[in-house]
Length: 119
Image 1: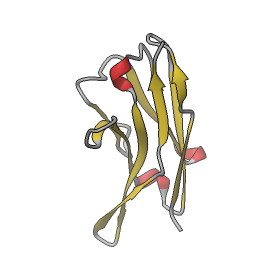
Image 2: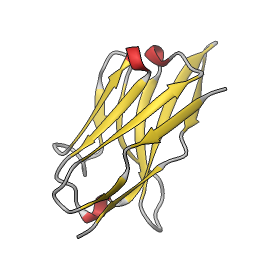
Image 3: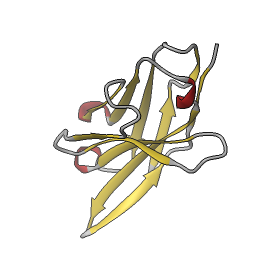
């Protein structure tokens, strides 16, 4: 059974920082592309950042220079370090895994963790 469990969300003031973690099980983590997406209130889910098995990263323009995605294959964990947070970063943040198997890529999602940026 595949599980992606996010942690680290919460309430933070504008300009503050948070680090999200996502622990994966049930997949071969080291060969999976991992990502973070978010869904702001009343809006659609959007890409935040991804990291490939080789460590190549991709970021949404809105978070470049403020957020950093990283992975620890020994711990089956992907992280999202969020600095200089803004009110518009308020959203539910979801961990994502794109797991290749038998010539097909299977996509999995975590349950999400709330991040609220407010004074």
